[in-house]
Image (cartoon, rainbow, N blue to C red; front, side, top):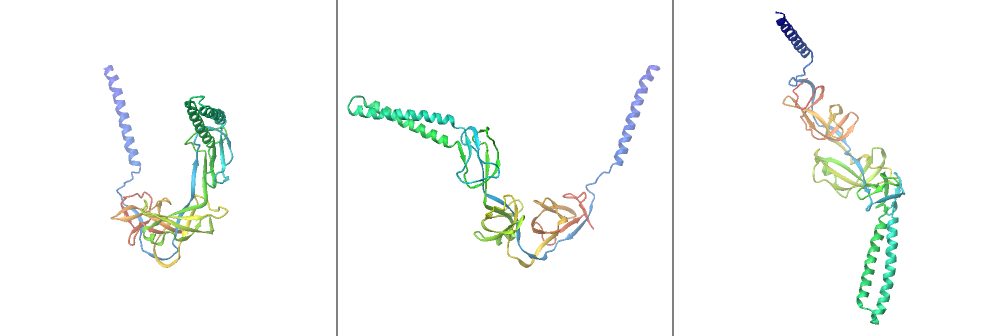
Length: 349
């Protein structure tokens, strides 16, 4: 009887613990809020209409350098000198770095000595051959040896010239990637040179506004950081293929100010003639989600929230002018974004 109790009591205790744990789990599950994705979310929405607006047709874009390259050595060698630093202005052909060429110069001296001896042999054998004192084959060997030595000299001179790395064009050193004592090798960047005396300015233009631009036509361009500086930009490229946002790239070539005021990477606008009473799609900036690079809005379609990509042409205070992605009559969600997701059931108030 005692043996049976020893077995039954632990089993009963174990069963009680399991039952208690299951009861606690169920109680906790009931207390935790379970979000129902199928439940309709209450939102505020407006039906979009085109509005009268004075359109200045300014398109935002980015300034890019006319030329930019990272310099590397064509041969291997220890860096003996770096003549520039980040921010230095350089001219085309200006020496920037010097690699160790002492061994190459010693080899060149050796070849010069060979050439001097071979030239003397050629002169001597030429006289002796005319006098039939030696065979002509000796003169031929001396002449071939002299040609080979001169090729070696030219090769060494070319290698020595490559130990001096020069600027390929006028520009500014925008990155210094090495120091004296480092080892240079082909393909390893040492310096970055950027030319901003001339700039490229690129904007993305919606299909409907693409006819506003013509190649070889000059337009006014201003930088956001220096709105008082008005630059002239000639349209050099109008894209033939739309990008992900269904816009076309338009590129302008711009001459920078003498002080190089505009820097690569700055934002700016290309300004077109102002037009009055233009119908445009204007939405509140608070209705936009996503990022400034890829703006999006929620539209209501068949009782569901649908995330739609849009293209913004201009922003004014708390408003945004939409150039692509929306049309008149679309129902756009303007409030109630908590728990909202693409494809969610919505209830418009």
